[in-house]
Image (cartoon, rainbow, N blue to C red; front, side):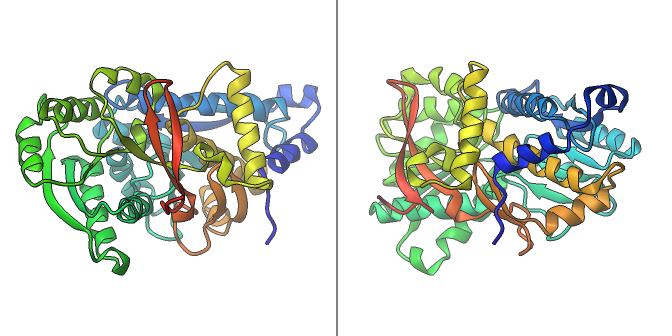
Length: 391
């Protein structure tokens, strides 16, 4: 299998770079990006933007794409699905061949039907979307389904099989509910039991009643999956309820700045399902390790420490760059769609991508590693091998 590393990808950009004078005359290649720069998901959207800004500067320094500089055009949906739809319609009307975003599952679900028939080719930045095979839409990172499968495996291998669930009622929480049940139905998880399943609205200021019922069910661990301020509401309620068991949270909340605000009520054991950049020891030398080196060096040079949400935009943008480069001077949505749906052997920071099987994430359970949050030094430590297997 021919593997393209991130280093080889940017090297291609350098080789095909036009002379400076030509680049100055060529119009910039505009790539619209719908993300949440304000509202409840802004901490994720701003991480998306950080990664894209670093990549834009890097690809342009190396010559751009097909003799053209690249410019991301940021469209803020305010963490609102209706606004995302309005912005998507604007992008469709502009005849852009490609779109990146939105940030959240709900927004991605809202715009996916608009682009599914004719494009633009859209790379959603939420792992919670499961687009139809071989279409115009892809979803970032390891799917929620695969992340949850690895999570159940991790707790089961620890001997923690009496599990409780606290989900939000939004699209992300609903998708998580389906995937928890799907994971439990696997033969290997026959002994796993969900002893309590509770729900809350993102606008709720307390989950004390739900946690009282969960505590009465005597679970061995609590599984949550929501992002933003609502996760803080959950953690505060868990502390108030005196629920002293391992707590699992959405990887979208793996933001140091956010988690640092919760130190006063952080549980003793807070676990997340992360991706391979959070477990570099799991990797030997090779193209994925090389891709991660470029990633970490870019953030270090900018004086930044990447969070999990930074990973959500990095590989999708590189895949879009690769598709546009192969589409030529006048790329079409159909060309981008066909290229990405046939792409394989592409080395990103999350692993080796293969879209040929119709999985629009391009990467599966093998890209998951479980980590533990250490509030004392604001770091994450890997506590599993790949796919959630215990070390």
